[in-house]
Length: 526
Image (cartoon, rainbow, N blue to C red):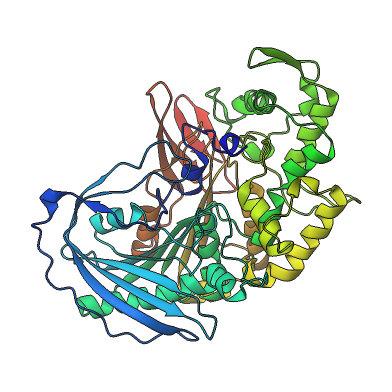
């Protein structure tokens, strides 16, 4: 069953999709090449720190690292490790362990400080899935770019990023301390201590601080914007899993639908609907190029495929009315028995294989098992529509205030002069695009013109945190830095990818709600 969940999208496994912006989240020490051992490692001293509010410092260490070439192991489910990071400058690694109250939790905050070439900025890296932070290649890549950079595990240390192994105590109760760390406290403490460590090390404060995260890291960025708006000057929060109390169980909806309707579509049948939707809406932006410019406006009717035949592993299958009805329910998203919308479905152009496979999406099933049923062995395949509606209400009731991260009041961020920038893939197969756009609409309704502090970009054809049939933004952090420090607000984001045939695909991503229109090889936003 798990093998099906790890099938590739755009050539990358699910693990890579969850951590595409921060390519490896495994908390393992990088290997350093022998040739790097002669690098200078001077100037690395244990900082003097005050603990954040409600926390106690358990330990602090500082270790000089030679840099060089750093390698990381393959992520869970990946067939190959990420590429080595070469030419990493020498750096000082500071590890701080915190605990909170009498809970006995252990939160690790790690900060890397380049020995030379510091650009005067601090960057904090967000997590993915149920991982609180990113301890992979993103750290050395940020150091190479001149940043003092940090991350946190939030005290949430699962065996993989897909399950909330940390959620329950030994007596079967929700570990509210670690949940709070994962939901909000960890990123805030990273901001507080990361900036303090940077100032202690260099003798002066970072002139600007930035958050950089996608998926869970995007949700964390929105939580920072809403509850700790003074932590960062700029927040890059991509494909944000906001409204986590709704999103986490919302991603179980396709699996519940297929079980409740007793109609489990084969992968080739799922692909047939996605392929047909893309083909039907492809030319809406003025070019037939395999990229749907405005997936939200794609109103392809799945019933149009009834009677079509698809070949699945040598067996010819016929699309039925029942199949089309299942797809329609999945695309529409979860609703109550009386038709009230609970959450959003994926766009018709998104790959259905992750959420509508023969096994449940593990991030969603783990939420139900650990946080709702409080039983890791609970069989989610038994969930009926009535059960689902009950569990959804329970999730919102118990956890919205803890991890909802969808408060449209960004007045604190605006007063602080900080900027929030988001891009979201039009073909995101894990976090529904409509969730992000719904939040943006609520903020716009509250404030009117929001472009001075909050900008959202929809990347046509891009999947979760990475390129798909269409390209992903090339340097969104650079665009955010220019916006914050030079008041150069981005109207478009440059995006690029390499197609399966090796062709380089480039296009500009438009500021939402504008969409791209192609004519004569050029893109205009309107």
